[in-house]
Length: 417
Image (tube, rainbow, N blue to C red; front, side, top):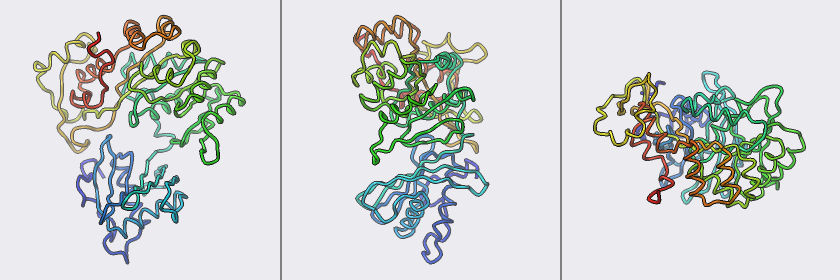
């Protein structure tokens, strides 16, 4: 199925005999749905109970699309099929439950499915997160960073010890970036451990451990145990409490390269979050290698994008006119749409804000300086803010002003500069 064939309304997937329960086969319907979702490059599939039907929806390029409505009976059979193959409890419809499964598609591709069922007022919301195999993990070059940005990230990854944080809200691609960094670091003479909840991508050559809250095993306990296994690199899926933050900083100060994510609006906000967790500023200043904050925007399809007159947007582009590579002309584009894309956009791409530590930034953190003072120091030491990174991508025809404006956080300084 080409992208142009993707569904955009509630009647475009014709599940086999979906309205005739005597012939409805949930296994066949599940296979049709997964093949369709993978061909659409969807990241998630949702089977959501509504008052009189089960809605089938996809998340593609960061947006939700409705693709079909099933009768309550057919929808429930399909939901229970996914719960069963994922080893999630089918009988208990009251409590949230999780599972996972590896499915072989009709073309022999393997897809890893993470299943989560959440009770709702009309029944349940069943979410399927779709992951490819090891080969689907991106290289750093494919994340969407510009050459100078990739160099700064590789400089940080070249360190033998220290802490690298990837920051952003839910859905900003933090996990994808972490896996790309692990792929870059992975080699036979290096021992890499991960602590995840849950494990999203299975990677060969890496020791992956999963948090088990029900079994009483949390991030901090796993991290303390992993340190006794002499790792070179540790990836912590998320820093979410004081204990994990402190152990991550201690591990990075004791000869390990530690990668993790933290919820924060920008690079400076990641430092703010670590301080809020109670991390000693002296230890944080000595361990932090840098922060990669990021957002995901839809990338314009290079096959059908339409060039516009930039004269009406001179003010927006004025700050970056001298930064566009000489080989590229300064232009702006609008989405059109073709058989290779979805409404003029073909994939998600990253806009990063990279803070790479310098002695002067470390000194500000060490002193416990106000966060705006740290932000000003970072800007003076070469940190390119989100706004400028977005302007560059608009000027290079990667995305649109509307996409960048919709996704980026407010500027850190606001009216205080």
